[in-house]
Amino acid sequence: MKTVGYNLLKSRKFWAAIVGIVYSMIYLVWPDFPIPEESVIGVVGTVVSYILGVALEDGLSKQRNVDLRSIGKNEEEK
Image (cartoon, rainbow, N blue to C red):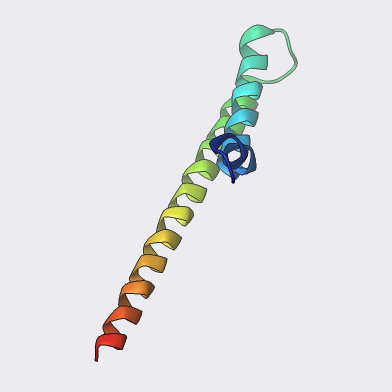
């Protein structure tokens, strides 16, 4: 049986969020770290875009699967 923790560790969105958080935390904890502010903003923006894209992809694929199942049921009734 797959647990929530196992599914979370397999999630691409989760790992992208972790990378974004770590990158941001490095900049906040060590302001002297040689990462320009523009790079931090660019990386975090890219990570957020990736997470939103994957979420949209997941949502649309689930919706499509539901639509295809309902089409199959309608054809069986005919």
